[in-house]
Image (cartoon, rainbow, N blue to C red; front, top):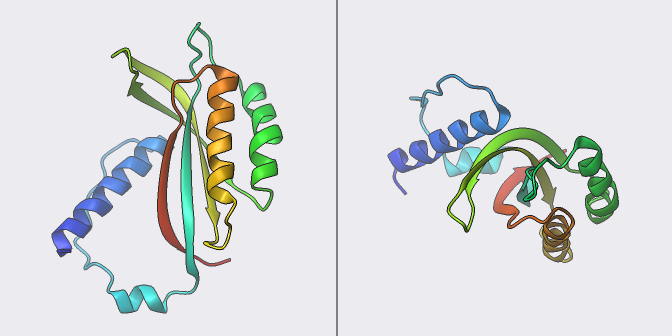
Length: 152
């Protein structure tokens, strides 16, 4: 993988993070050299899986999933699946549904990191997605997965 490709991906991630967090403004690519494999290996921590789930708040018949509704959903479905913890971020986003209509809406992002040894995580994550779609008549819950080096 070339260095320019790596910097390009980092720039995309930085812009995406700024958009999700509502930081606004421009994000400039760093001219600093990309970390070497030795630098990454020397950092503390171990490889873990990271999953992000993106929950849209617009309801098909109008209105939005309220803070109280999402908290109740989180307490009932997400917390039992990941009692060791997760992070919830509030955001705004847009997406094009299967009907071709672009919807701009409030959203919530749940970030979960878990060890590779957690054999139940994938099933639990899919159950969370299914439960949200069913509870709030959603067409989709976006899921992204990556591997991160984690240290506590």
